[in-house]
Image (tube, rainbow, N blue to C red; front, side, top):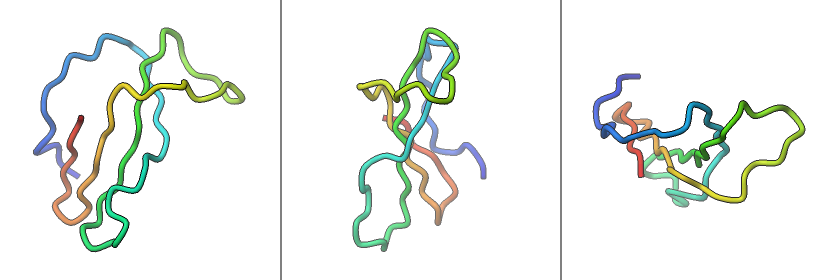
Amino acid sequence: MNSVGVERRPFPAPHWIGAPGGAVDPTGTERLIAIDLAALPAPWRLGEPFPGRVDFTATLDVRRGTWRLR
């Protein structure tokens, strides 16, 4: 995959965690996959809960091979 379409954003935290996001394309025609990202002050460890907030959502367009951050 290439990074075409990814906008430069300031990322203030050195640690990030991601989880599958909400339905971006419920019909399945667009082939979009969303990942919710949250910044963390320290590395995430197995067994810790996912933060209760979403700082960015990364969306992969499978057909085009591009990412979009929002």
